[in-house]
Amino acid sequence: MSHFAKMSEAASVALHAALLMAKKPRELHTARSIAEGLTVSEATLAKVLQRLARAGIVDSTRGPKGGFVLAKNPADVTLLSVYEAIEGTLTPTRCLLSRPVCGGECLLSALLSDVDVQARNFLAGKNLADVAAALPVGGSIEDIEKAG
Amino acid sequence: MSHFAKMSEAASVALHAALLMAKKPRELHTARSIAEGLTVSEATLAKVLQRLARAGIVDSTRGPKGGFVLAKNPADVTLLSVYEAIEGTLTPTRCLLSRPVCGGECLLSALLSDVDVQARNFLAGKNLADVAAALPVGGSIEDIEKAG
DNA sequence: GTTATTTCGGTATTAAAATACCACAATATT
DNA sequence: AATATTGTGGTATTTTAATACCGAAATAAC
Ligand code: FES
Ligand code: FES
Image (tube, rainbow over all chains, first blue to last red; front, side, top):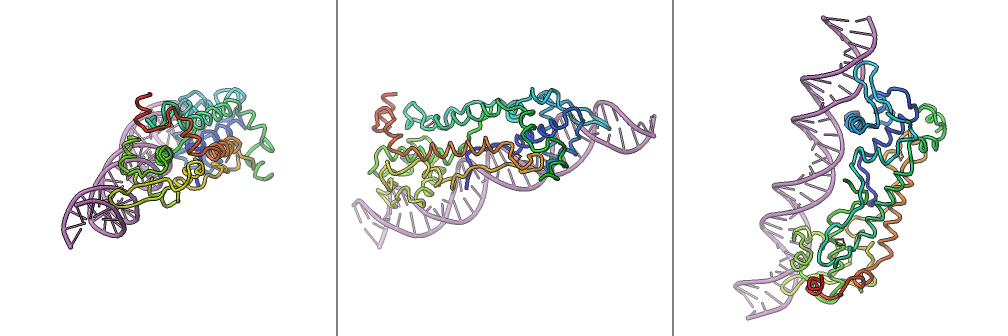
């Protein structure tokens, strides 16, 4: 049992954390509260949030009552920008080997680059507001847990 | 710079080795000759060929004049069967996290499972004969090197 | 200004994957 | 029979990524 589409844990956590913050766009969220909301390790999340902060996707404030806020309007933050803040620019895969057998034209590029392009389009075409709107209640985590 | 479509080195080598053998379907190929043809490490290739043998994709013969041959007609070997011999069955990704934020419906499943399905269809729809036919000369590696 | 809280960033540990190695079994050649 | 060749499979090493940890910096509250 294997999968072809692979996303790092860090990228997945970044997307989920961004979505969580998009639900309450103007409130400060501490790393701890987000980690609890997502039930992921606080250590891992801290690194992710740091990178999102450096990328300008979230603003961070230190000290008591500090935390993280979305830097822009959720509708202006694409999933792609969050993904790329973690993984770097998403570029189409050229070729794995580039060997004589391939005879110039790549055996797999049709598959690999298509997949990358499709993924990029998907991520670029959705923003945090879109995704938040698609959720059941649109309120807090508690609401969802009740509804779930 | 990152990629979304990821294939292990082993799977890539398996596909390339299978293609190499498909070019001369009835000849014995030693692990060494294939490794040289692909310019990959002999150690890595040996493991790959072993798994292809266990999966019944190639037949192996030991001793002098031994080596590997495609067990079936190239047209009867899909790229998927080669891939799955190495990686295991290719199944659609369900979800990375499955957390309350996701509100029951997965944030990313539309992307991840689509990618997996697309990849599976691509790999299932092409066999070794198809790919070999798409190559320039269709002959030996030497032919391609001359032509390239 | 002291203390508690929270992010920052570097480092260390752990886990997983890839890669290499080696002694063994099988078989063709002599 | 002896020898050389070739795949087998288990193990060990290396590389890489994921994860955890901890002191330091910043800031709000008292
Ligand atoms: S390198 Fe051979 S198919 Fe791309
Ligand atoms: S687990 Fe949250 S989107 Fe799939």
